[in-house]
Length: 186
Image (tube, rainbow, N blue to C red):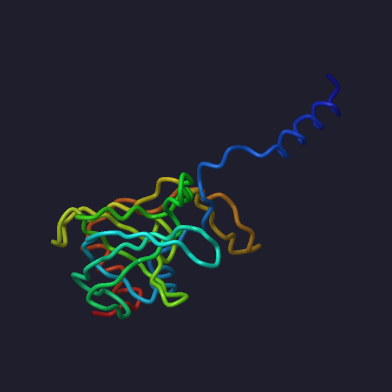
């Protein structure tokens, strides 16, 4: 095989779409996350319900949470987080990298508002599963299904994150302090 033919074969291989098993996202630091959120809350997930969006025909899953503490912004004592996922007939809808909110679990959430609903600010990276309420309780960020990118400060180009997802395991106390330091107050 000639060199030119080998280059052509490689170039064509790059054009063939591969199966998608991850959602590409810009990795957010805690200060960026706080700035993009209307609230940061510690909450207990209590239940879910599903509706179908009239305009798109796509399912929406609404997860009810009870707020245990508000670390930044403002949120009601209980509210629902909407996500584009669920089942319509025999068709399952959703995408890799969306947050998993399991009834009975306690979580730290970064939430945004739009269309009169609350949403996770940045998909699964906005969900930290908590193993208790004390400052030394383990906090694990959900990262399955996410491919992180970072912005090059000089060129502004997005490139795959060199270090991978930062701080996927922390303590609740460290997260509380990082939110406060980012201007979240309280």
